[in-house]
Image (cartoon, rainbow over all chains, first blue to last red; front, top):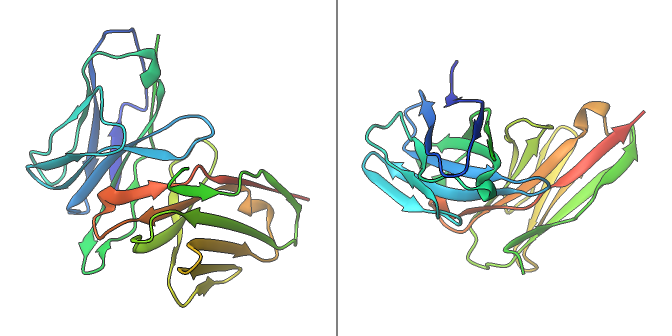
Length: 115
Length: 111
């Protein structure tokens, strides 16, 4: 029962480097999203997608890009890492029903440190 | 003002205690509401959805008050295993892209 799989679990970058956080789900969910969580705070939405080929910005999109070429995969790209992007990143997916999206299923998180 | 605000906590209670968390939201168009549980350094997991009529799952009861724009979570007979951070989540529409998380309330249950 894989659910939502994120890689890598840990990453250290230098300022200005780029990288991609991978997210894959095997539940055939239409909805996928990326959140960041800073210490003592809740989750803030970075980008989300309601289906292949469709993405939209969340609350804190600057410095991040996403694409959704398949239902299963939703990678998050950091274009030029900055220390302010040091955080824990969670990918989540959900089905979309008649009442909207249901339970969010999260990956285990990716802990990113930017020096 | 934040769109979703929770009791700041932390809550430190003895085993067997009853504890209640409140969460207020500012957007009256909000449509669905959830409580998630997050253990230290782990991913959030759904605890309960919150329905207009209120709902109960074992020791946990969730209530929604649309008029006052708040939701609550009541935990009865607290267990050590209930120690975690509880996140309030509010959806402004049928698209979960409009989900907003509160900052969470940390509960520690002590022997």
